Length: 475
Image 1 (cartoon, rainbow, N blue to C red):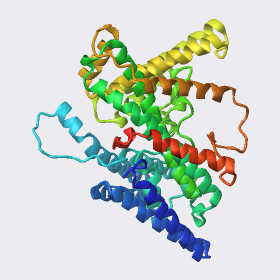
Image 2 (cartoon, one colour):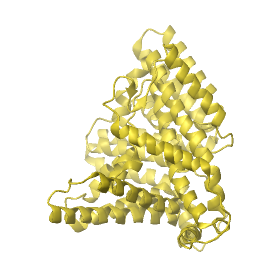
Image 3 (tube, rainbow, N blue to C red):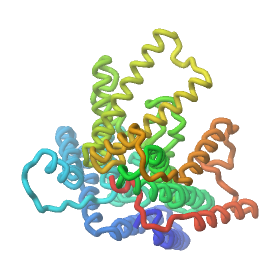
Image 4 (tube, one colour):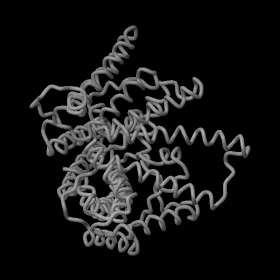
């Protein structure tokens, strides 16, 4: 089961209704929070177990480590370094075994093995959540949580389980009292954000996926313009797919009273690659910065070390996305690009004296250049192997003939996203009709309800009915 699955809406309705019933009949806030937490935890394990019961077992073992290690750090202060490192290493071993075993055997080993290692859904996301919690407790940012149910719910909370966002433990724990009551306003906001994400996924991303999959499966069959169009289509697909999931997760979480930060902030209007990584997958970017880049030394140890730290961070960030050398190369290219941008900005300051000096023409060119570069990098992200990526690139630059298919949906979506970004730039300051950038209708009015129901009808009319999973659910 995933958030876009047909059975998820009935599942969500049951969870919400059962929690509401429980809260309606209980008056004690502490009991309401405790029992609601238990209910949502049980439903979360049902959610992951519907995909494969082994996924639930792995999540449970990971949660045990996440619960006991911070308690050990708190109790045995003199051994806190050993305990914290042991916990982090254990989590990384779990991630390594299930995600990278086959990768390293094929890359460095000559042993023929018939062992089949399953890849648990969302393992990269909840492992990173666990590591950040352990590190924060070790750094004494906050105390270890002694509540078994709260830690396990932090790890398993079903809206964010499969593909994030990566939520920090203190922010999650601080909002747990919101479970005391399911408010109509939260339901009104949350369900609208959910359907915005659902529209992105099953109308936009999934329709683009049909064209992208065909071309990437056999690029030699298509002409250069079609292959180029497929690369642009994947650039849009992965944005709609992943931001769609994030919207749905944020929306469902809002129903239960949790407010998670937006995971995307119009990344394709970025003027440079540094800005792109501040707008794309924000929860992962901030995680890598705080728990990898800064511990490596950040920019505190000279320019050479700064560039090296940037490169290592992006290299490992690429490997986090998938167990393949194409992901490593994707991360390395982004690492080099970040270094080049820093060098360019230093040169610009020396020559012009003001690194912020710019104009509309230069800004437009910078946005286009960044978009083209990011799209080029997505080739390695999407390609099944290096040879597939080479075929795609060669197909674009060789001006070859072949099947011509300029997918009209891509043009419509591209025009739509450009118009949306223009509106975002010139839109006046947001008012109370917006929630974290989402346009929210007042469903108590005929106008608001009509717009919302029309939007749902549009989803039902235009949706792609094929069974497609979220791209980042595989990571």
